[in-house]
Image (tube, rainbow, N blue to C red; front, side, top):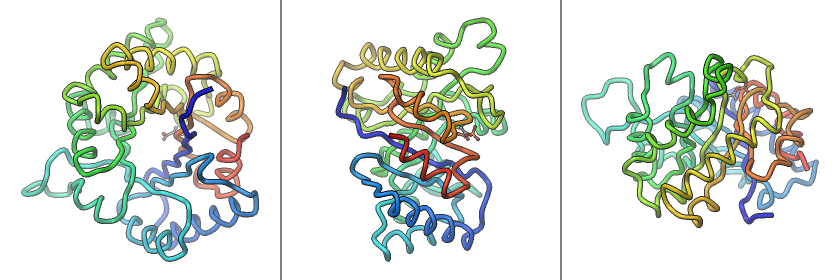
Length: 258
Ligand code: PEP
């Protein structure tokens, strides 16, 4: 047992315009309400594309929904000549609570390395938001049995320059790349192995109170049918959900895994 509130975050990736976003968030809120969802027991976060954030903010604020929302990325820079980038200040102004940083799709398609991921995490923290720092190995690394060392090296890189007080506020998502969008879910034991190793590393980098405060999520083909077994593991505090978060009823079931 621990005092960490489970966190279920839905990463919509590059899907849904702002009308569709409004529809999905409303449907999710109604479905959760029908299921008697208590947001203080399980936090529910949607992570839409940037262009939907204003609409989601208006809906969440206006209808006083318990759902929170995040962004999929943030610039490492404060402001200025960075065409196409979005700053932490801009996101904070839209009521954003969470920022996903270092998602494997950004590492892969935008060549983001651990230093940049760390800079983005610091930018999010500087803006008063919580970075969800994504780490996880690819298939070759997994086949070689090096998943723990590989993932911990990403953790070391991302937390370089983050002090203990800030580190305690962060969230980590362990997302083995071979399990993302493939339908190939890690076993609960696979998830626990690496999530537990991540928590132990936080205790080494900082101290036990930081390690106990940080929520470590699992991500990779999470569905309502497999979430409960993964959540039963002691070092898994939630899930980062891609595909299944685009279906309100399915995502509500995931959030109500208990
Ligand atoms: C993700 O994008 O973070 C993810 C885990 O995707 P999926 O659930 O679709 O595997």
